[in-house]
Amino acid sequence: MREPVTVTSSSVRSSREDASAAGALSGLRTYAVLLPDLCLLRRQYEVALVGAAIEAKARGCGYRRIARDLAVPAYTVRAWLRRFTGRAEAIRAHFVRWAFALDPEFAPIAPAASAFQDAFEAIGLAVRAWVLRFGRRALWPLVAALSGGVLLATRAVLFPPVR
Image 1 (tube, rainbow, N blue to C red):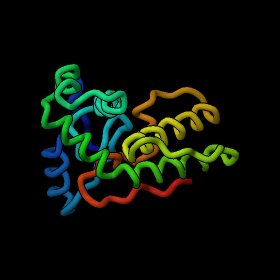
Image 2 (image 1 turned 180 degrees about the vertical axis):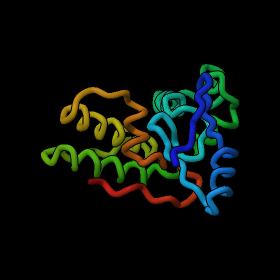
Image 3 (image 1 turned 180 degrees about the horizontal axis):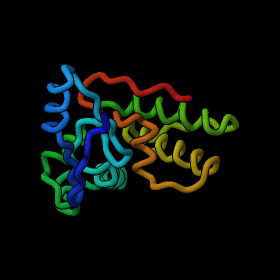
Image 4 (image 1 turned 90 degrees about the vertical axis):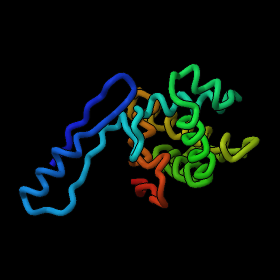
């Protein structure tokens, strides 16, 4: 069952009540939610907004300024950036695998100044490899798709295999 998703502004909400009711009627105890590529798992805001915060941090902006510019609560932006920083090595490794899977002749990647910058650069390289192979696509929805929606997952969710 595909759960309906409602998009308002930059906030994303699903109708869990409908899915729960449908599960109860069919005797199921659990249900699956298929996320569109404009979402990340367990995040209310669109991936483009989360990505804009990550890009601003990579440029050196602080979380309060980013929050003000994006009209998002500061604690939300801080949580996104902390999650990205905490998972930076796993994010870097996952997107480097994608870059090499999409372009086997890809040159070695030189380390950047920080784990955050390394992860951010790896995302850019994987997206570049995708564009060269398949053509243009919106940046952050592509990142969401390549990460399986778990870019900023709150638990120890593994990235999907690179195929």
